[in-house]
Length: 347
Image (cartoon, rainbow, N blue to C red; front, side, top):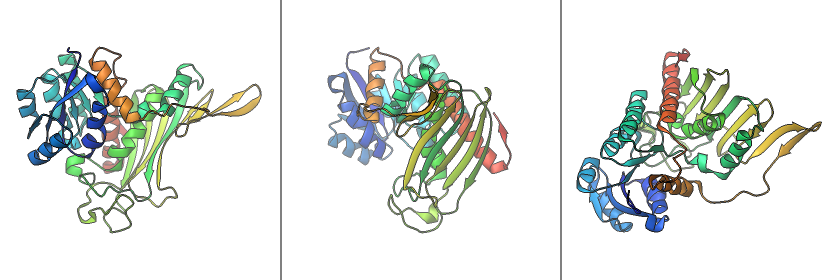
């Protein structure tokens, strides 16, 4: 491995431009973004010019064939995660893939297998793990402060937050709506803090009540005539250790808050709300709330990319693993299957 990580970007859309490229560039001499690939070659060339990236290609295969890369960021719609990640891994690159892992469990398993065969890192873009609230709570959990965490709630609710850009409302390209897009963030955060227990069964329901009608859009006007995903999903997950998790995710719902992203945990020695962090305990005959007086404010996306780079250069391994990606994908797809059948699904 060279001292400078040679990076390629797959997908020249919003997440590449807002997160991956600028945060790689913040790593200074540790990183050289060599190339970018996008099916829209003109967009790839435009982004390459804007961010001073030397090479632009129309496909990931062209980029991997032309350039000697050490790592690749996958920033495409969900449908193309698996193929792009597997191609990069087989070319000998570490991979940072945006969430969710893939469209299907089989794809997530194939990605994990490719990473194992290549002996390369495959990490997923679950940036909430890198927030200071989560990191602080993880230290409390690891120290036993919450005890046995047996119940959790994961919430990713927007009042009218259907994205008015991109392909977020296209089921063919994304696999679903808020469950697989924003719900997956809070689900992963909860699972991470719970120690990623093995799921046993799921029961899910999805709704399409608001997205197919015109309305007020707090994230821009959406194409309601071609809205093919759910606008809300709800789910119940039971784990093999007896713990349970309730999940709510919505792009649009008639709720009070404009945007709520949170995880709530309950253990036999304490509980917690993660955002902002508050820990609930009984100590010395009193019920107490513990809140941090100070937490560092380094952005989670910046930490995510910085730590991936350091891992690729020989530092600590990424905290997101391919095995966790498979487990998460199994839950997501199980919830969609349950919603379609109206029955609980055994995983």
